[in-house]
Amino acid sequence: MSSLESVVAVYSSHKAAEEAVEELQRSGIDMKTLSIIGKDYHTDEQVVGYYNMGDRMKRWGSIGAFWGGFWGLLFGAAFFAIPGIGPILVAGPMVAWIVGALEGAVAVGGVGVIGAGLFSIGIPKDSVLKYEEAVKSDKFVLVVHGTALQVSQAREILNQTHFENLTRHSPAVLVAV
Image (cartoon, rainbow, N blue to C red; front, top):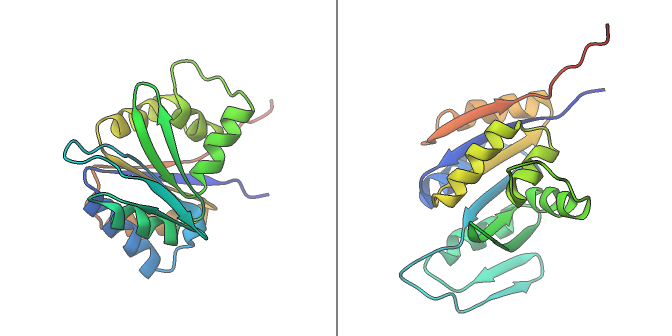
């Protein structure tokens, strides 16, 4: 039985996050293993609306093409309004992790909705808090979750991008005595 691992990269701009996703795609990484989280906050505009067309979510606003591109590449998409953080957009399997954590009433002291989703896939609480703070600070969090081989390949690719922080998370190994 192989356990799943994660690599998480934090980017300070949508451009850096977009370039990382494009590089992963060019390198053949399965797009179904990627998630991205970012605030939908822009002081210079008012969002006119969101709508779905098939599997593509459209957004009217200054970086709508950025999010629209992710909606086409990544599996699943959602808009959440989170107290303390504000409106966020999530693309990829992270949507299911957040919804699953909410439906299962996952309670992890001191973490919010994003943290509960990350914690549910084995990311340690101290790291979860760091990633939630990154989203609050208008940064973008990119998660690749898969087998050890998939995560190793993704980490090598992401290591060549303009990340602010890059961390690999392996599940804790429990040894019975």
